[in-house]
Length: 368
Image (cartoon, rainbow, N blue to C red; front, side, top):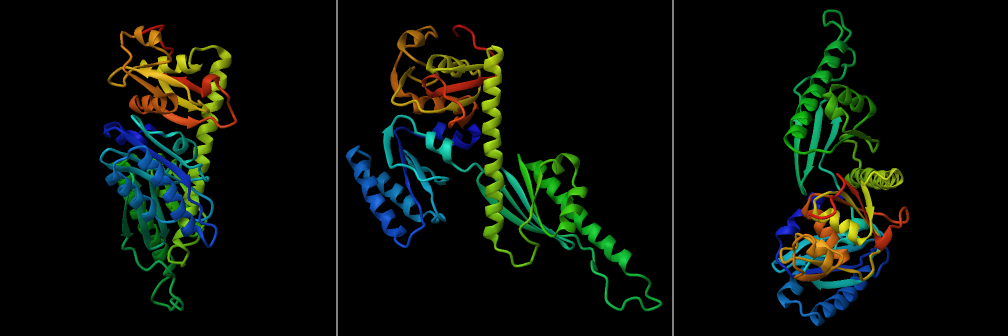
């Protein structure tokens, strides 16, 4: 996952509360199960000393989020000021409640949905309905190219009127060009990663041909119906989620393959184990952090949480004094976010030493 997804956490005030639980809605008693789960979670929060104001904030987040469909998990992260993350997970999660200096993000990394910034265009010959999803916000607009008519009128072959077909085709092309121009403007004004196109085949093809080459390279056609055909908006969202998941899995696979290749050629651009990964993070060398099962392992960090190491002696090599002992499964993802490194779950594809590995931007030095 892109570090930008979590960067707002860096300015959060400790302590952090991390809550995970199963939030499946595939039975008639799902609402009752959620209430029982919340009762268990709230009791754990209270036992750990969480302020009751924050317990109330978390309860509202748990109860107010739109219910998922089918099997699902839930992640809720709060800092001292309130809830900062509240979302569904792809799979049910074991109930976990933590109060600590840093947030626990591993389940989100491994099972969270990762949505790129995207433009959705539902297009036909008259224009398009466009939705922009950027940095967690949605905005919509309609583009009307103004080209009419776009359909050949029945019986218009009457002498004196001329053939209306060329006029209809040019009107349709004008409308598609207007849509393509607007998409290019929107994609150019935001960091757009994908353009999803919905519509009947002819309109989709025409739009792809009209888009600038760079924007067309981001495009993905979704075969879920035509504009104004009455298709369910949920179908479109499901298709987008499926494509995002496919891209997410492809990114993980590519990262694991690169880690394996760099390890094999002994390039110094692939490391594993707590000591080596901490060194890479402290020197800003990590490009992608690969996390597995780190168990209850801990690391030490300086007072500003900018330097971490597997033990105090290694930390001293960086001229830093140990001020905090932290769980590795909290500290290492935090360190990756701080330096803008991506984070992926290795799953069963890789089993690194100490449950953690990294692909590096450059080989780290022996000491900072």
